[in-house]
Length: 166
View (cartoon, helix red, strand yellow):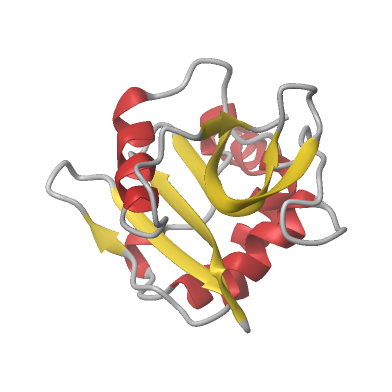
């Protein structure tokens, strides 16, 4: 009976490190992530602190799902062991979303044309920018480099225009 209670308590009160209940290594495409209820719930929690119309006026987690849900990108396992996936908005493929995770931390990045200005507001720019949405206050530099490399391959300029989301 004691074993049963202990197991039941783990099922009812999961360990905080189990926040991600989806396994990206089992998925092939960005659209698979978007269709996963667990990933949808994860993005809703992940983006709960962020506000802004980076693509359109909607909660940021919905913008992320739309960005990953257009023409799908493949989930890639990098040499470092990290997983990386990106997609773009249907009918607006200049606007993109990427997700990179190393098993402990993860980062989302948007390529948007509404970029944070020095006044702290989103402002349209023709050149676009990479906006990073950190899960924790300090950025994982390895994951950030992956996002910057991805953005550089999609923006038409050397992108030093990297902003942390507001």
